[in-house]
Length: 185
Image 1 (spheres, rainbow, N blue to C red):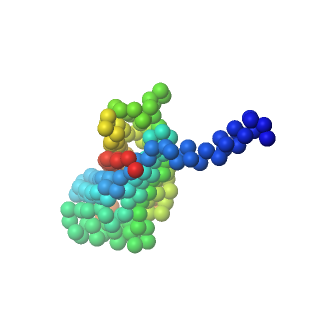
Image 2: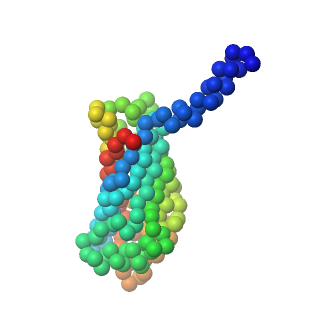
Image 3: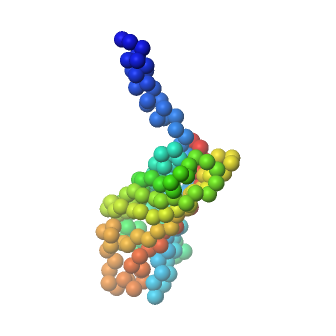
């Protein structure tokens, strides 16, 4: 084996190590809020237990949250949300797998505030749907990262049926806000 072949083989052997060498950031206490504004009643719920992993070098991003972790002002709303609409016993979690897309020339590993695109697949109620939205990524000089985003979701797009009796109490589009602070893993 000549030197070029030996170098090539050594490089191939190191590739798995290099891919694992990327800095990874994670959180287990991300906050997801949803808001439904309807003529008869506004509904808000907050989940402060979203888990997420983010790799700045590639933009790879994953979220997972238990549906039952959403907290409502009224216990009856929470019960109806879990049992009648989200069927959280059958569909216990919501997930997002995708990536953050930096503006051309922007480096998400550098300190500063970055406007980003968010692209991926959102799975709610067992139904996968593509999601494309925008967000903000703040990278501090001490290596902490905060990500925020807002977007809307239609319950019907995820196979969540709303009975006609309460249809006027729930918005056709639910506003979702995501706020998460990452620490290096």
